[in-house]
Image (cartoon, rainbow, N blue to C red; front, side, top):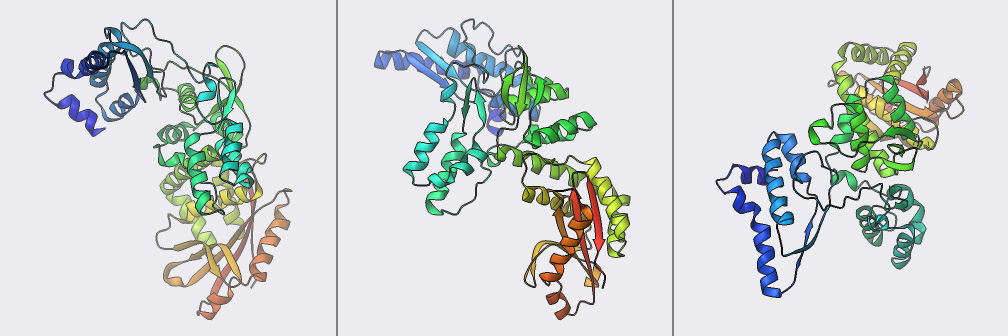
Length: 425
């Protein structure tokens, strides 16, 4: 971003800069006697950075001048290929160019060249002798549909294969999250205040599809003007993919794989933590009830939080992932209590307690075991959670260290409902 800004603020003539590619093309043709092929990758990134940092109109002028000089009046040009996430046609950055061929992620021409096919991934895994990781690779990095072909993300597959070569027991990782700010997902979550949108996100997180009208010719100032535009942005930037077309403009959209779903879950949790931090009164009542052993009040307040946030529904998601979600919600609530020390999966006794809380001056320690009730029986699941605390002796080391008051809670969750039980001393 700074390099773009320096260029715009410098005394260098924009005309001189923008004619540079044209002049270079002419020199190459003169020297080598052949026409030039010009490749421009991510041409829309300067526009995105300029929009974020307040010099958008200047960048529009610069990019327009650059493309006109390099592509319209360049007799040394054989052909050019430009790639980018956004299909910027209404920006007039292509003024005067009347011979463009635009291919989007919905077109079938060249669709198989934008990623790895399933056959190519199988051959790659076989070459590296890691075929037994095929299902992991497919679940995490497959699912992007270009035209009529389903493809894997090459960056992710190569990174995971490289790691598996050194450590055969490596788990799949989110490599996408390190190459993008994920601002589109974060902004979308922040805009999802109405119940309809929250339900649609929950549907996507459950591995299902929703139908939306897609506008592929958005300009940057329009992206966040409405939720409808954000749906289109998420589709064009790869956070959602298509699973079929309903008509000329409407598509069946889905989250492509576990990696992208992880990004959604991370942003949902971050937004939840921000919201909880602003709700000081409810937070204080929850923590006081937890410390005072008021299990009914703890359950009521926790359930009220569940009903306000985006949750993970039953279908497609494994039990462990569901428990992790509710675990994360609890940590998000307790994490803003600065006077308390909150640890997750703290080693104690013969196993690990889900959450351990030390209150002010360590006068009270709270042990919490969270479980998901697959059958919907919250009471029985609570008893199982408390039984695990006892069987694993999570409190044993604490008592040896002189902690007298230990509160043990079993918390059972099912969709947006929960039950809280405290063990009797």
